[in-house]
Image (tube, rainbow over all chains, first blue to last red; front, side, top):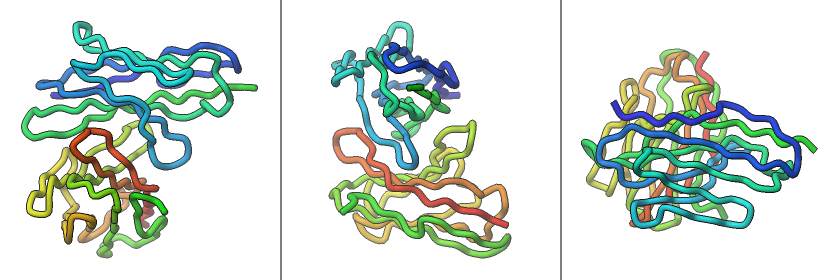
Length: 112
Length: 111
């Protein structure tokens, strides 16, 4: 059975700290791994990682895909209170038909 | 204007009632999806459609049906709502590039 597991489930840090969120997966026919940020309602896209693009960076956020370890990390440096959100990892797979499998998310709270 | 819209945004209904959630998109994407989100369970795929004539079941399709009326419209129906269908429902779209764009969500409460 395909699955995506995120850790930790929740995290509380202070502004300025650096955090690392983890996503591991077991899927057949891996296609892509996506990171989303969910603040109040709809998830918003952060990064997509594939076999041909295993590292992405945008400002204080960066992400790396480790296909050997079947995992990805999302790093946030110099955290701000606005980074408080649930961070979702999703894996695109073509097992059966194409679909995305989501992890349960990591809830990050950044204290001022 | 939002690229992906959902109506209604909130709905309270009773057990046994039929209810329809609607999704519209202006992104011109062929692919559309319906998810539900429950605390501690993350997002789970209910149905997805890769074009108007293509409808596929996701991992939790029982008790739900969908209709793809046009490229831009994808509706989700609960034929006979039950309390464990209380959840936050998201519609999403994607194009050739795999990024999914989510609607604002519909919060459904089944009494």
